[in-house]
Length: 423
Ligand code: GLU
Image (cartoon, rainbow, N blue to C red; front, side, top):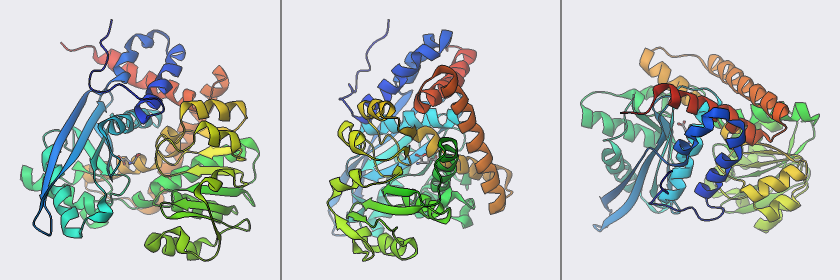
């Protein structure tokens, strides 16, 4: 008998609702461990914090922040911090849970956590951004730490924000705790290869999936939604492998070019003013992005983007989930029925947290690796994880997503069982 989670009941197709239905689908493959599955359906701990700051014009503004530690059975909490106007507790719960599955899927010694502040950082000055980051870090400082929960960058957060977080935590604890966050600048114990790691992981898993499908990357047409740190890096690596990037969408709009967009010119323009400032493609309405003729679709923005309707009309044969939670469960079923292969977020975008793990290990040993070593190790971990998941999917005739959950949930629930219930 278990009580319903009291502080949030999931809404249909909400990130938390999506996550819960993904867990339900794996239960038949868990054997006796299914007894523990309820543990995955609620976060271990969720902290809501008030983040007051004095704005440049003298006003006192209050923001709401969160840090959710979903599961720590296998190790300390791990996961990014997101600054976005749509952040809610329910969203952060889902994102923290996906971190639990992700770290277990690639077998990193971590649990899952996530944080966020409901704020539009584009409306803050640099001074206000620093204040909000520092106050938030101080507020969640009672539950984070190098051995308890290690934040990292996510949507709209970066190395500078990680540097302020590391400094604030260090000032409050009286030392220099480089291992408290990852994704830091190189001068502060950051790792080579971390900035590009998520996009690289999307490429590595995508290249392997394409090979298994018999899809030649040379000349393959790719549509990318979200052109930040994940989408633009993945696009560059696929273009280097001979693919054509035929459509790109970001918060400013959508551009297409069936001959392939020139990334060397597009990327710096997109970073500064958004993709529609680029003149080497046609601007089309945002909804047209989803029926652009393509072979590979890379959603690398936010959750809930691939709806049932969009799943029905995509021409892609392969979907690479660079974002967390981009596909709703009804769309997942449609893609499976239509024979479209989905490499799920919890393996596809795990390159970021994998190099975060390398950063954390380097910080503790105070010994830093060169970039080749990082990339070779990243490739190896991602390929091993993907191969194991593929075998599981073949064995049970299930989707890669359910197979990833099967592999990950077994690791998490086995750890849970072996640790036993306290007291
Ligand atoms: N925010 C990234 C993710 O969603 C990276 C998290 C980390 O490095 O801890 O996987």
